[in-house]
Image 1 (cartoon, one colour):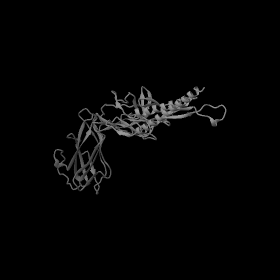
Image 2 (image 1 turned 120 degrees about the vertical axis):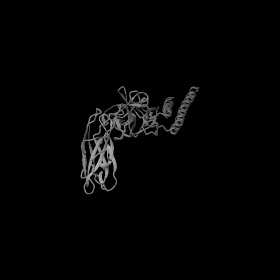
Image 3 (image 1 turned 180 degrees about the horizontal axis):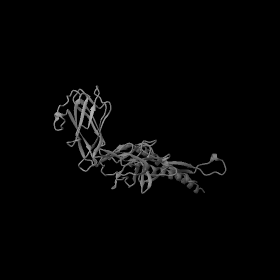
Image 4 (image 1 turned 30 degrees about the vertical axis):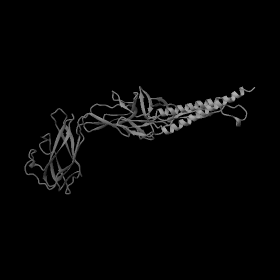
Length: 404
């Protein structure tokens, strides 16, 4: 009599229950992937005789494989929570050892690095001083809290309408006398130290379709005469952009303000309606402190500053494998590369087969509790049935022993 079939059946049923129990235990683990036990039948090697009468000697566990299907994505209140929608894994580094995970619950350590709960660093592409992403070998991502340096104004633009019905003032221009000019506007520009400077522009009609533009910085006139002249055609338009180069000395220790003041053709016009400014733009800004940051679906970590500017601080990368089931589970929601998984394909989210990211969200475990409970009932019945075959074998053996 052989008890091997029933014993092997008990072993594989117990292994199946282990896998089911582990799935249920991790049903609340973010990024967990459900595993299933896969079995194979066992036959003794036959060296002769008829194979048609061969009886198997039981079952064995061929593999326990995790199923890398998409889990549900749920939103959270933490901007550092990131969910992967699609294929790919977060690339993590622990003292130089690379691992992979689907758990996007990150936080900042004391040095500003994005880390997991067990201290592994999230990796990605860095950014240069201008906020341009530099795609190279992925490195640990770090959020810098340094102030954003100021940028001096190098270009200023004015879009407006000058009233063609206006009459030319008779008296000489005097910024303190509104009767000596037709209209004015002011805009803020920034010096090399990030100080705000007020640039006032005065428009004075000198002849039909011709206007002088005078300027003052913080109330001090720029030059002895106009900084430029606008010449409109008979339809009230400029033939081309009117560009007035300015170089204004400062007394606060900053570099002189040197920028182009541009009146764009098609946007600076002269029509028979009241004076109105439609747009004032310039490219300078003062220094800014980091007020917050966000993570886009492309993985770019965008810092927001108190001066209204934003700048990329890095980009999260994803890694994918030809055979994800070949990855080795390492615990702590991490997997390691093996020869069976193949080498990782690393790139920004959304590139190729890689999925996209969703900030302020996490991916739940892909465990279906209803399915697991039904599997548990089935596995329990299989275990009981295999125990029953052992019991039957025992009864038959006992019958043989009792024969006289």
